Amino acid sequence: MAGPLRVAVIGAGWAGLAAAVRATQAGHAVTVFETAGMPGGRARSDDGSDAATDNGQHILLGGYARTLALMRDVGVDVDRALLRVPLRVTYADDTGFALSPRGLRLVAAANALIGARGFGLVDKLSAVAMSLHWMLRSFRCDPTLTVDALLRDAPTARVHRRLIEPLCVAALNTPSAEASAEVFLAVMRDSLFGARDASDLLLPQRPLAQLLPLPALAWLRAHGATLHLRRRVASIEAAGAAWRIAASAEAGDLRNPDGPFDQVVLATPAPEAARLTQALAPAWAACAAALAHEPIVTVTLNSPRRRWAAPMLALDSDLDARPAQFAFKLGEQPARSDRATLVVSAAGPWLVRGSDVVAAAIVGQYRAAFGIGADEAVDVVSVRADKRATFRCTAGVVRPPRDILPGLRAAADYVAGPYPATLEGAVLAGEAAAIAVGIQSEIAR
Ligand SMILES: Cc1cc2nc3c(=O)[nH]c(=O)nc-3n(C[C@H](O)[C@H](O)[C@H](O)COP(=O)(O)OP(=O)(O)OC[C@H]3O[C@@H](n4cnc5c(N)ncnc54)[C@H](O)[C@@H]3O)c2cc1C
Image (cartoon, rainbow, N blue to C red; front, side):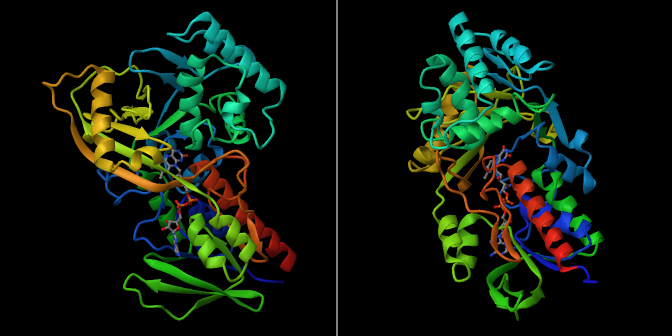
């Protein structure tokens, strides 16, 4: 009988960590290679301390079932690490939609939409009609449709601007004029119209490193996995039916190739996956390389205290003077109680003007939204711009499949799947790759 497989996981973001934990649980001998000194990839913190800064504000949803299960499996107390609040698209002036429907889906969704504050009856009825329309079509549509094209005849302009656009840009990091309606509907189906509590917001109460990356690393270490941090994989070579991996240490010295490995899980971002597979699988590499990316800018402010109706508030945004779509107040984190974090998704048009311009515009936007006069100080604590935050989830976008070659598969948020680039999408992709390793292992027996 064949023994456990030797599995290399390249990249210790949330996808790679998911693949490594699940493959280790299945009894395989796992080796992880990660370029950075800290695991977590795009959802990482600068260090492991309670005061660490994250690479941008992240929120999870109640429907992130696989991510929450993985966090629990590596020993995270999910209820303490995440603050659960009902999803509301509430604006600073207290208008908005409360969107965590309970009970019967359509009735509850209709109730939630009709109970919106600051919207007229026509707006509310148009939102209900839109929901009914989606449900009757089982949340399916032509994959080449954009969100705007899907909503051509409904709802009202106000519902579109103050509900659909913020939800779309937050979930897909792509403006509704270009965003994939198919993926948007999948997100709506599994969150707002999904299982009870699926649409709840789960707001991190700890730095991201403590939510999964560091606990997963400790779990892997304790369960016998080999971990190589600060080891960038330079190349993957086929060695008969197996694989060898050449990785360099931080100083740049190329080590003798590691391996052989029976299976490789490639959990890097798409451009790096394309580079590593160019010679092995040119068509797959070309598909990965063709994905376009979209930035997210996160600006943290120190600001005078104001009453916030919810820890996450929507902001009216535009391309002239108001970059941010959402503001977060993480009052539960004592070290940050005076801090507000503002997020600019689909930030490409803003970032070309420069980070300083974005930050200055955000301070102005924040003052106007919260009625803070010129006599009160609003200081910029940090500006983080991630130029390749996610792939652009446009209508008809072709995402590369999971399987690259026998024994070589991709696991990351851009791999073909129902969801946009999210933590849950990354974890699902990592787990799918680990399951595929298991199936190959069964065949080998
Ligand atoms: C600012 C920002 C805000 C976001 N907000 C949210 C949110 O609110 N909710 C949500 O669900 N998602 C959010 N996302 C998206 C989410 O962070 C990503 O979808 C997810 O982290 C992707 O995980 P991944 O494992 O697929 O890839 P990555 O996180 O990119 O991990 C890839 C890893 O591979 C490593 N690597 C690369 N090349 C090599 C190599 N040659 N050798 C070894 N290692 C290598 C990298 O260092 C990295 O650690 C946000 C992203 C950003 C940037």
